Amino acid sequence: MVKYPRRKIDDNERDRLLLEFCQALVEIKKPGESAEFLKDLLGPKELEMLAIRLQIAKSLINGMTYFQI
Image 1: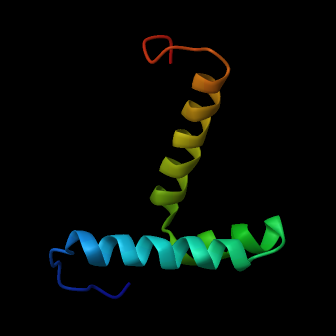
Image 2 (image 1 turned 135 degrees about the vertical axis):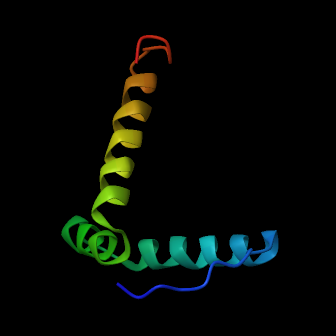
């Protein structure tokens, strides 16, 4: 894995990159292609954490509290 030097990203750059990421997601038409995009972009642990966060969000939408989760 390539290591990049850590540097602080300012708020404007972060927001620009987030919008660029969202635009890339919008342009993908099929769920399978979206999954491949995320697998290419994220590492295994990041994918796992994303899945956990989605499970938490679904639980909250279904009426569970943070304490219950």
